[in-house]
Image (tube, rainbow, N blue to C red; front, side, top):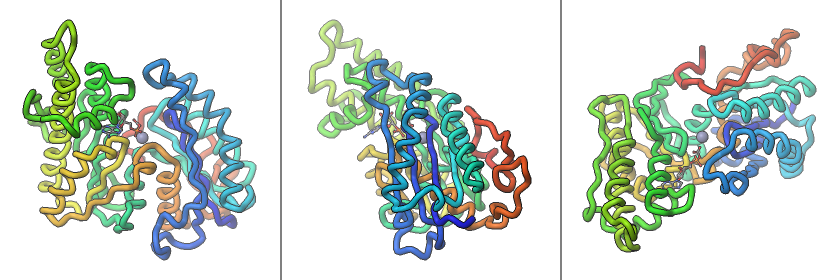
Length: 368
Ligand code: KG4
Ligand code: ZN
C-alpha cells in the first residue's frame, strides 16, 4: 500500500457515505483518533423517502448509484488528494438492504481493481462498534468492551472479547428500540420518524401518570418492545374519538421513553454484571436520546466503567466508522493487506473478486 488514504464506502441503508482517513501513522499516535479523518461526507436521502413513511429500497439503491461518484470527488478535494493517494478501500458488505449494499460494494470493487489496492469488505454492525473509537473524550476502546447498538434497524448488546471476536449478548425479539419510538410516535400522531419528536415532548411530561410496561423478557439474551406498542395503542384508544390532548401526549411520551430506556439500561447493567467489560459503548441513532444517555451515565459512573459515546453524526450511519474499523484491521494485520500478497483472482489478500453482499450477516460470524 503506497497511498496514505483509506477510502470507506457505506451504503447499507438510506445514507450514501464516503470517508477518507489518513492511515500513514497509527491512530493512537494522534492527539485524537478523529484527527485522522480527512473527509467525512454523508448524502442523506431522508427527504426522498419521507412521503413513503419509510425507506424504499429500490429508490435508495438508485440514489446511491447516482451519489457515489460526486461524493468521492468531493471527499478527495477536501482531503487535498487524488485517486492515486488511495491505498486501501473499506466497503460495507452487510448487513443491510441487498440492493443498496450491492451498489456500494460494486463501486468499491471496481475502484479497488482499477487502482490495484486491497479491498476490505466489512460488517456494518462492526463499524457501529468501532464508532466508539471516535468518542468525544478520545477514551481508549479497551477490551473486553460491551456495546449497546440501538437504532431504527438494530437493537443489540455486543461483547468484543478479543480483537474482532464478538458475542451477541442480547438482541431484540421483535421491534428495534428506534422502531418502538417511531411506532409509538405514530400512534400519538407525530410525523415519521417520530423518535426525536417523541423524546422532545417527553422532556416536559410526567412519566408516572400513565405507566407503561417495561419489556424485560426473563431470557437474558433478548429485548422485546412489541408489548409496549400494544399498550400505547390501548392507552391512546382511551381518548377516542378526539385523541389525547397536548398535555396527555407529553405524559404518554414520557412514559414511552421511560419504558424503552429502562429496558435498555437494565439489560445493559445485567450484561455488565455478568461479563465485566472494561469499557461500555453506546451507539446508533437512539444514542441521541437524552434520557438514555443520562441514565447510562449514572449507572456506569456508579460502577466506574468508562462510557464511550461518539458524537451524534458518528452514532447514526456514516462512513467514518467503517474507515476506523478498516484502519484498525490494517494496523493489526498488516501482512494480510500487503499488495505483494495478492493472487490474480483476489482484490487484495484474502478478498476474492467474487465477494458478495450479505443482507444478513451476524456479527459473531465476521471472521468466518
Ligand atoms: O441510526 P439511525 O439514524 O438509522 C437507522 O435506523 O439505522 O437511527 C434512527 C432511529 C430512528 O428510529 C429515530 O426515531 C431514532 O433513531 N432516534 C431517536 C432519537 N433520535 C433518533 N429515538 C429516541 N430519541 C431520540 N432523541
Ligand atoms: Zn446502522
